[in-house]
Picture (spheres, one colour):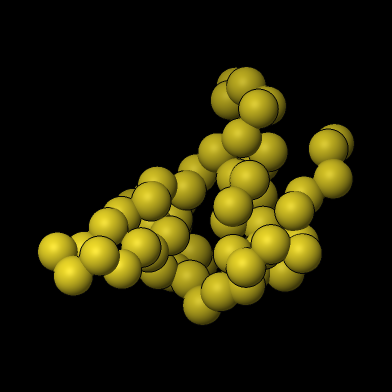
Length: 64
């Protein structure tokens, strides 16, 4: 598995295939976890930086 970008401001979310960046009308950017739609263990908008996540999958890794 690739090394996640834990040093980034968003932590693991920045490089996760389940993330969607959402920009508000005021220009703020939020990290939406798409896993939250199917699994209540994952918060819709996690508190950043995320350092540990059982749902993390690198964005360049194919889903099965």
